[in-house]
Image (cartoon, rainbow, N blue to C red; front, top):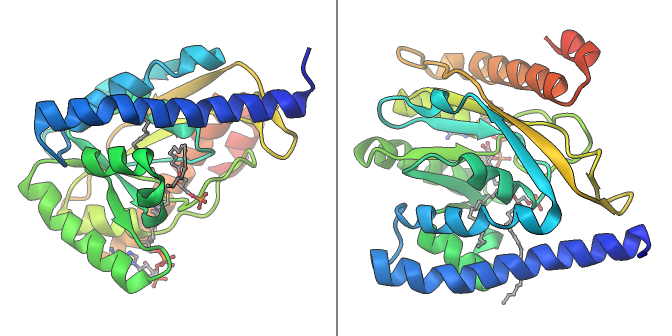
Amino acid sequence: ELSPAVSFALRLSLYCVLCVMGSLLAAPACLLLNGGRTVRNMRIIKNVVKTFKYFFGLKFEVKGLENFEVEGPAIIVSNHQSILDMMGLMEVLPDNCVQVGKKELMYTGFVGLIMYLGGVIFINRKSTTSAKMVMSEVAKTMVAENVKVWVYPEGTRNCTGDFLPFKKGAFHLAIQAQVPVIPVVYSSFTSFYNPKKKLFTSGKIKVEVLAPIETKGLTSDDVSDLTDRCYHTMRETFFMLSGRPSEAKDSS
Ligand SMILES: CCCCCCCCCCCCCCC(=O)SCCNC(=O)CCNC(=O)[C@H](O)C(C)(C)COP(=O)(O)OP(=O)(O)OC[C@H]1O[C@@H](n2cnc3c(N)ncnc32)[C@H](O)[C@@H]1OP(=O)(O)O
Ligand SMILES: CCCCCCCC/C=C\CCCCCCCC(=O)OC[C@@H](O)COP(=O)(O)O
């Protein structure tokens, strides 16, 4: 019988160890099979990360995967609660999809290396100008290379049981590239994971991939409306998935 704080520390340490070991295992496979930095490596990384949930007794219940089946590129937006999100991400990650991450992640040793090899797009959150330049470049390459891009529009981890306001980068990107936005919502982790209360037990996570939102014909004037639409739809779904339907009604 371990105290909740000790159990929390041990389980989180195990997660970090798995990430490092998983990266050590996946990196040679990525280099040998695909030769270097390419989105194709995400398949290898996905297969490794998908085994992690068994160590923690986590179950994923996924709905709406068919909504990923759009022709060509798209922007995928989802809520971001914890570093544990990598498991939920890999549970549903479609082929040819890279994520946008903060550049500090590049310096996490083997984990940074595996993110680099998988094609993660690193942005400098301390410089809006530089982040916007990277995102504009992505708008061009994702269309040319038929790649989907996964963005966490809250811009940081948030495990409060609600959403932070959305930043607009993902929606500028979707409109600049004229590609659909596909929202993905994960139910609240708070019943099984809460760093403030040192809680990390087994649990079930509901995931819903929502219908794509078209951006063809939209212009930069529509970015705010598109952001609001995604925010409200996702927040409503979040409350529904988290078993809080009365808050879903208030949020629409
Ligand atoms: C084996 C184990 C291995 C595990 C490996 C697993 C691999 C998977 C890796 C997954 C990595 C996941 C990492 C997750 C993260 O790191 S989340 C943090 C980083 N992500 C983000 O921050 C994305 C969301 N942020 C944004 O979209 C921001 O808007 C950003 C572009 C970053 C700029 O932010 P900031 O500087 O804070 O500025 P604002 O958002 O306030 O925007 C300022 C004004 O600029 C306008 N704007 C924004 N973007 C654009 C654009 N592209 N073009 C034109 N204009 C833009 C924005 O609208 C603001 O103007 P207004 O206020 O609207 O007038
Ligand atoms: C040589 C350097 C050694 C560093 C060793 C670090 C070892 C790290 C080991 C495991 C870490 C697992 C990380 C999994 C990926 C998590 C991605 C993630 O969720 O990043 C958080 C980021 O979205 C938002 O950051 P903030 O909430 O704004 O903060």
